[in-house]
Image (cartoon, rainbow, N blue to C red; front, side, top):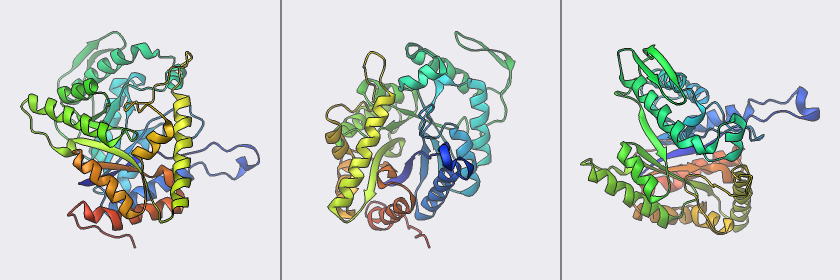
Length: 351
């Protein structure tokens, strides 16, 4: 198995008395240092979210943050999870992504999606009913931009470009690896049929992960291609701790975050879209089935379940740890006490 990171950073807006001396960049700097240490500990890559209008300071300019991280790392793959295509100018996005890929020496993992949070579509004044069509047209232009060396034109429903050659070229040819989030069997098969890698959400149960991987593998092989477990990234929340009290406190923090996320995804009619994995049911039960919290032995047991389900690339999200030095210690313990049992790679311990 290989391991990567999944997550976000926070650049909070100062309020009230703290406005004069508050450092909004602190959360971004902590995120960079966390990822730099993860590379030293043997992690393969990182995937960073894109979100807008939350009021929580989540990452909104993903490629900018990853460009800074790319300058501080040498091997860590730089992933977007995901850039929501319906909100972006496809030519500008193709240029920015190719620039990052070029500067990083071909380390971009270009994760894309259609979006699911109502408040974000409303903020951009884009109807969610157009998400599929906008996604398809944006992707069509991006792929042309990356693969055509001669001028091309595009006149679609949402975008129009005349006689353009998009620069710079990407380092990876014909283009950066494309990853797409999905959860249901039909959408998982569509990802495979497009020739893309698959991202599975952090709230899906191990049983659902297994079904998704099986559907994806079947669709890949039906096209005459070879399935590689590294084509599927499975996200899991994690927190390494020794006491039941610490575990329960972390689970409560994660549950509160999940409830907050679901509110952002709630439509005016009360319909909730929980993201690509659409994990339904009692939020507390979903939380406990999916999260890898507890002792190293507890977490190893959860990883064994995922390995049995066919998972090979695990993306860990440390949000349940509460961040800061506690989160850093949890990352180190995962690398030193859990990872060696699932990988043959030699790990370099942080000093």
